[in-house]
Length: 173
Image (cartoon, rainbow, N blue to C red; front, side, top):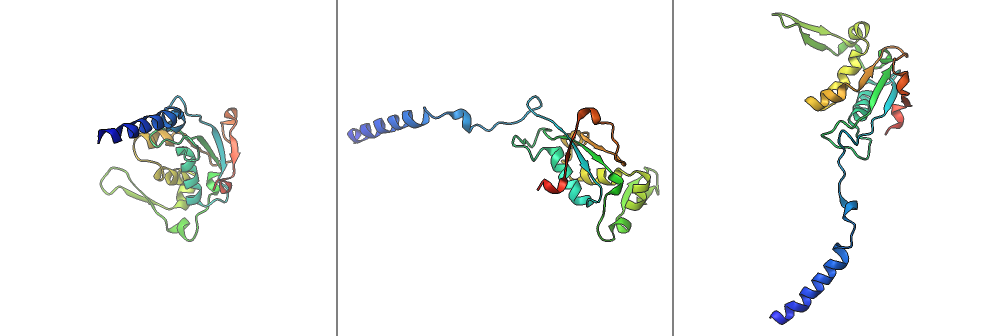
């Protein structure tokens, strides 16, 4: 039986030398992004007359970097997002009056409730920040990504020097 194996072995070695050894294996490697190779940009998003949840999910996707080709789940490879006109965000249905934000002061009987109407008067950016924060990963990486979000109530922002590019959220899909 050994005389049958020799030609087959020669065929296998020739095939291996022709195909596998001459193949450029660098093109088949998955490239993982790291802190040094990530290319972060500055993006400007206008929240005027946008639905809260839909806008928040797109912002969370931008913060994570899921729109990039070198997206890596365990690396902060998202962009810096500047949101303007956060006080003009919309909620559908009766959510503006029925939705409740719950917090606790830390003292006995210290549970406090607030509706989005009250929160938009007191802290206009909180409603959008709260929605985006809930859509980011929990833990150190999510907190690091959340620091790249800058929410402002009016149309003015102090990040003109970074030259952010205006993005229409409805065109991202």
